[in-house]
Length: 279
Image (cartoon, rainbow, N blue to C red; front, side, top):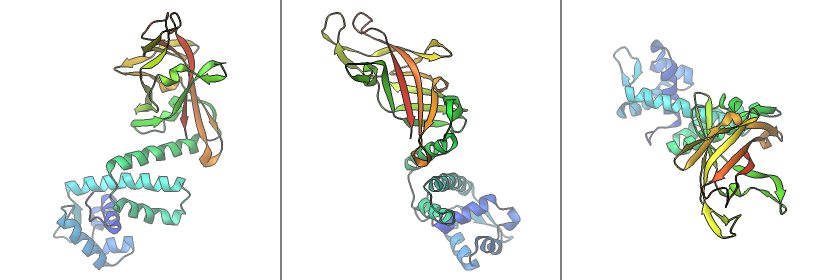
């Protein structure tokens, strides 16, 4: 976004993106946006120099190809900012003005992507607050295509030595990645090398998870392998919502079976509970 774009210039671009062609005049723009014709003219002068708008002989203004692309980008980012501020309990009368100011600050695309991800989390918590027994496919119905990152813990099926964390918890990088496309999702886990004592020899050995199965409809099914990642469908996760309001926590779990590269003799196949959190 151009560094010189002001909140009003953004507002003007959004107006031209939606307005009927015959309403894209200085007079109509000033009336609709509640300002003076001089303010509109000055904003158009600046936008024209940046090749964002083009004035026509009939006193109407059109967006250039780059201007339309910029306006559509602003519209998408405005929506994200407004929704994020809504979840932060900003008074409704202040949301639009604050979103325009934030947008004119010129945040990077990477920052806006992270903000969109956070807004998506907050929207999910609002939608599913108080719900029980829903699955990951329900969540994907409300997520746009893209990658989302969530923390997780892998628990033992039974407590051992006063510890309920599975050794598999050390075998993957945290957080996991949920990749959504067309309202379907896959949970990706990046595999790490783990050091542990051999169950047969007692010697320290290094191994990596090289096979994973997930429990679905009462049977274990093979997860996928993609380079250093293992993955399974998000529909395998059974969710409940805990807490209230902004403190709601969505808690999704599935039973996994994992095998290690050093073989069952040294590190036997283990069964554990993978739990992902949306907070």
